[in-house]
Length: 116
Length: 110
Image (cartoon, rainbow over all chains, first blue to last red; front, side):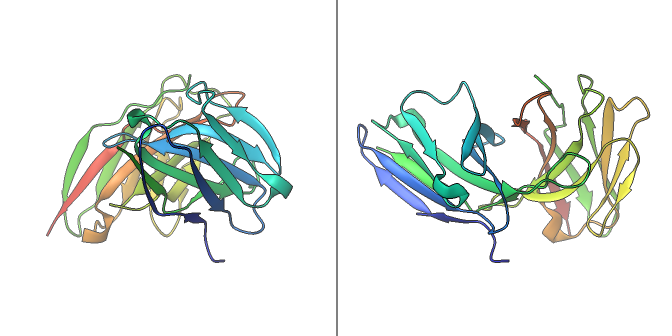
């Protein structure tokens, strides 16, 4: 178990540029989540994948945000035309369903985005 | 949406027990209560979860009120490494959306 990895760990970009983040989940986990966290706040849910299917998206996720999980393995989160308000930590988590219809999420270290 | 309420911060002395409360009066009958913690500059880390009965694991205990409208995370002997933000989390009913809230920042005094 190598844990959830995220790349890059830090990204600085200029307003208007596109950025893409990658998440590699724990290998046997079929569930994958993306969250956004700003300073002093808890993580906010962005989207959820079960295998390759994106089953849920938050209303927070504007049209500039898109996420994919081809073949149900790694996932990417792309932000187009970045704005300063997009500056945040982007967290990925993976899980598999436990007994009793819940799951335990394992989080990656996050990608910190700074938009200048 | 499912909502949790926690104190913003708490302090504890090292090697003493800590009780971290959480109110979740809007919980639905089938929702699990999850607790995660987040150390500085790291992603959240699973602590414990439960449905109705009290739960114990190597990290902590979870005491759930009979009406399930509140719960308490118990760290039996706080250490300096337990200093973190602790989140009590529900999943919004009928969705995959986990709602974190602002959590409780635990300070452990040596």
